[in-house]
Length: 488
Image (tube, rainbow, N blue to C red; front, top):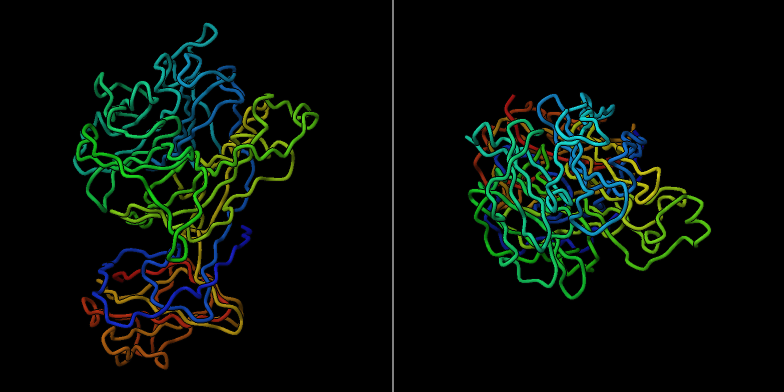
């Protein structure tokens, strides 16, 4: 895989003047997508790694699909990958009867098939991949989830939300992800609950948060005529709290507020306490194509007056804001006029693992065109961003931490002359624990997803478990993507 990068200077990080209470990370994996656990960086930058375009994986080529298909969701269910998307061959009002929900599946996340499910008829045949039809307005933006809540009944293993401002968000359940029934006739998130001038007119994202022990929903609202995101929570998926408008932070301060058409917020599967959002950034009125160029690619005449790309954001349990550590585009529009039209380049919901060292995100492209399709983009596992030092080297020190386990593992990549050494410090004194100083540390050289750190005395750090520590990473010509404590 090939990766391009975007660098964020770390000058805004400064050491704490007073010892802080340690953050108990247990054995969870921590990624370098935000500054939540960083105390200081010298000669180290946070670097965003853009995904690599792996090409088209699914065309919207059935008569009931077409150029206005979208709002896709990818779910990894054991060894099976499931893909859901709105099918719509021609433009119409939100919630029209022409909208249906189609389904595809894959054994590897790379090659996809559209099974003939026999559930809904089109053109006199039930040989379709439609899992929901004649259910407007839920089929406008139907977005399913695999329920991770412990003890969830087998017939509610899958849940979904769909609907518009007029209807409210309707709740759906399914035992197999194919046959769906309403939870109740009334919406689970009624429009009376939302105090904004316009809302629900995009993909509305729900999931069960293991970190918070409750369901969360992130959905689109309008605030001051800008497309924004609100968060609500529930214990039972039926009764939801009053929504809270999500703010944005950048470098410890306020972030620019962009139109975000979809938010795609989800728990990262290798670190479910970290919610990753690969959102569709919409630039209304930013017109690139002229009429002749638009006609040449066959785009609907109403859909080439704007542009879109994807941005990377994160948030953590209980937060009322997103960290926009990187303001630049995460997935840029590609070469060719077809990539510079309205409502294209919209990411599907969820990042999934597609290989031993690889994960993927999927993107809806060529919107409102005969060539509308979904593409796959690949990334290194944990590889959204890294703490990176150039050849001259640098160091990063974490905030005070507590951990469980007997070994420290890194996801990292170095050059041939590069390397990473780790010192474990007493957070109260700032001095290294005996046996875990920089002088004791063996340099880690290579490119691995899971490398256990060694010191002269070995790998065992269990004597420090439960204590307040800081990790000092000394990095030379290398990227550090993630770290976690483990038992080996």
